[in-house]
Length: 124
Image (cartoon, rainbow, N blue to C red; front, top):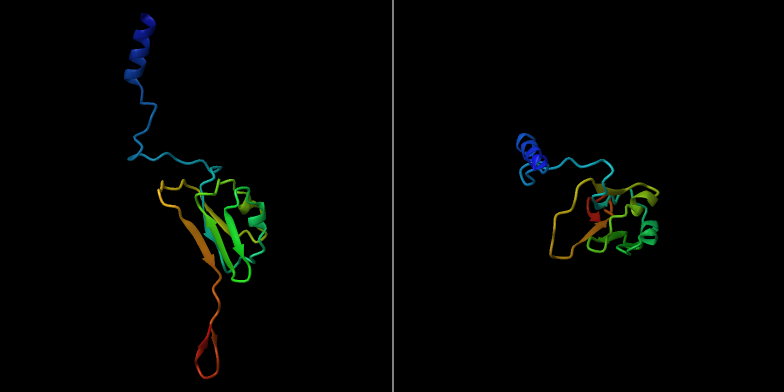
């Protein structure tokens, strides 16, 4: 019984073990793998190594159209694509993704530079 009284007094005088989550957010560790936010399309060479190394087949690289797509529901956040990218152009945010009920995909396309001829008209 005296052990229980000691435990009650200790809990009354100490701070709570939990935090008030919506109001006080926990500080994330630097080692945490958050979520992939996309690529830098101007740096990417669309080699397809990230697609080959992805264990869940969430990444699709379309080389002729210079398009990179990741299905966020398939991604298991292993960070393998970030590690194998030769240009280090895949971006990963260090926070958790918000919950969602709809399936989304991140699509990144290379921007084609506008070609302006001598008369001032543009050719894309």
